[in-house]
Image (cartoon, rainbow, N blue to C red; front, side, top):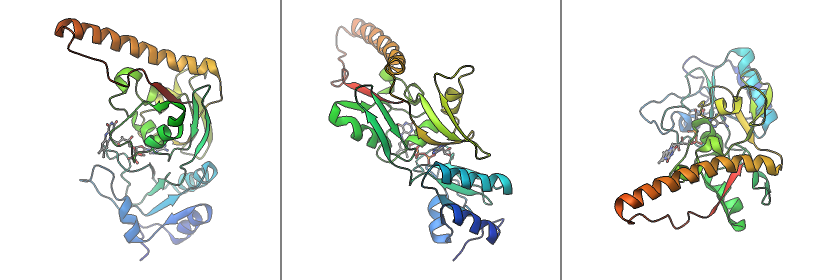
Length: 261
Ligand SMILES: Cc1cc2nc3c(=O)[nH]c(=O)nc-3n(C[C@H](O)[C@H](O)[C@H](O)COP(=O)(O)OP(=O)(O)OC[C@H]3O[C@@H](n4cnc5c(N)ncnc54)[C@H](O)[C@@H]3O)c2cc1C
């Protein structure tokens, strides 16, 4: 059954979306996207678009912009704050098909990924070289890097290495009017990338998280890790003093981290 949404989506608009990307429009399948980890709130979207690359994301967003259709990006839907909750007359743009690790530069510590790559798959991609991706939400087996960036996610490793915002140095983003922009920590002026990380999908859709292989850039990222390391060491020393040496380091505390650059 083709679902027309509570407010309905005109058939010609459905066809426009279908011309530029794969879409889901059957009620039974749309129900999959009615909520994220915040299951108390549920709204069936009018349509789900499944773009395969940035140009398809742009095309879908342009239709939304021109027809004033609300849209929300979705990674794996594990968010607990309702960020991927659709509105009834709106559509979901799922990044699930954009799940490729695009490049790895072990020497520089760089990895370039599409937003639908799962957190743990970044670690898997670099683990043979002795690296891992430090921000480690408990949902890392399924949550995506795009969702991590939108939520500035993290876990236990972040005490030492910093949160997602400390590990993303550049991003390719589709803005709400369909324009494609790139932001990086090396941009002049205000820290727009920093503002984007943690903005819960409200500022645009990340289509690539990347950087060129630049060793100075990596050093800059590492310096924030080093500051965090210094702080942790200080805290550990204080704890050791207070508890007479009962606190020990984590067994993997000296492992290398990997940053999305
Ligand atoms: C069991 C469980 C454990 C969890 N543990 C942790 C934890 O330890 N630490 C933690 O921080 N979180 C945790 N979370 C919350 C959640 O997993 C994280 O917020 C995660 O980053 C969400 O990723 P996702 O791919 O599922 O994103 P989604 O839930 O699909 O989306 C989350 C937000 O990101 C936006 N978004 C998704 N993709 C993009 C994109 N490409 N561009 C722009 N915006 C986008 C969405 O619009 C939405 O606002 C946990 C959740 C569960 C269910």
